[in-house]
Length: 429
Image 1 (cartoon, helix red, strand yellow):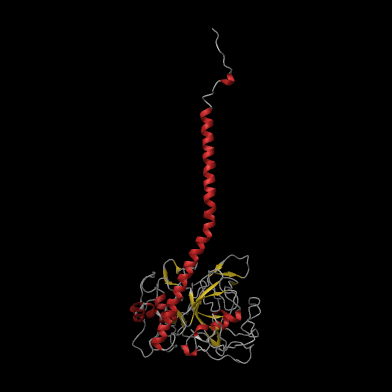
Image 2 (tube, rainbow, N blue to C red):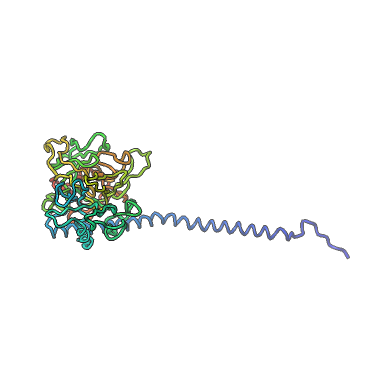
């Protein structure tokens, strides 16, 4: 009987085959998973821009809604008082009854005036209660609402308590563009909301010969137009800015709809200042505030301490307007001379209004933390450009109540005609 023999190569290796099979299984699984993730990743990557675009469209729609509510409140104010609110109000003269010599005084902005028409009448009344009353000319002082450290021994009712986004400081949603990347409050603790919508006080001259456009401004920044417009009321403001009263919400002045001779549907009243400003040097990556109410001590404005040793207080936020040093807008030196400089009217402080001096969405205007192109600054940059984070333009309100999206490619002269109420030329939205 013969015995069969097996060669070593033909003998199964039971100790190797399971490991190899396991390794192949892991490799195959990894390959399949990678293929699945790759196949899923392509449509997700394609969907992300669409999702982001849909979210931005929703935010822009909400921004439109905010504008609608604000301009409706302005119309209701006009229906009630037969005029629009002042863009910023003066806090009273230096000899106003009830005030101490040198006491920091800050009048309110147009935001405060429309609170009752935004269904915040209770807030309006409570703030009124904190103000000096019982005098022939009551003095409003926004500092006492703004700074929780301000407390006068003879006026304990002016103390507002610790700062917080609470009853006195916060108007949810309506004051801010939902796309804005700017901080809601000055600090984490408050004390007051920072709006990203600004009232239009007017525009600079529509003339490339005007001194409003200086050599160190942005290239091609002066308006080119066959029909000139030279402001009859012009002055200088904080940070080298130009202030005019040719718009719908000028400083220290009430305007009526009948004074808008260009037509309400052709004139802007509110627009956006809702994004960061940038340095004129593209290599500088620092971001600067472009919103109309931001202020901090290191960059901002502080009123002087009075003779009685009363404390200083910061300004800013939606409540702030202007201080008592502002005089009513006066005539320019020579309105027939397009090269004439602003008149002798001077404003030391201005918040929440703007005189348009630069093209839309011009963001590289800063040359450091405190200033940039003439009139541009983080705090009280009264000529900061109208700008937004929306791609391609800004959302703005017309005086008739309509809301529009204005492309940032719009010719600068046309932008000026939209913000000036009586330039003599009607520009269709």
